[in-house]
Image (spheres, rainbow, N blue to C red):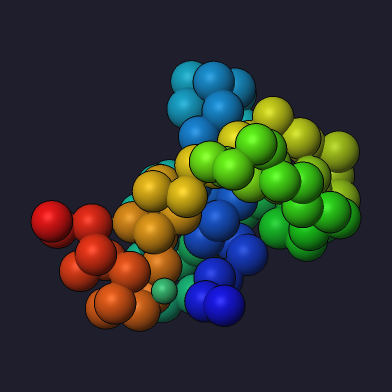
Length: 90
Ligand SMILES: [Zn+2]
Ligand SMILES: [Zn+2]
């Protein structure tokens, strides 16, 4: 299983609240971790992951945020490994 940086996952949360800027985070993660957007405490710690059907994962974060449904295809675009990103190209 691929490893995803949790802060990056949270920053990429696809839910309407995050995308509308309710929780203001940038989608692209800078190389320098010091430049990461400042998130509320524990917002990048995962409490739990739920499988949603067979097409997505729901991330439940320790700050209570739980609206992010991450389809597999979306997760792959975030994956650091070449294999998954290459698989998307087809
Ligand atoms: Zn969200
Ligand atoms: Zn991967």
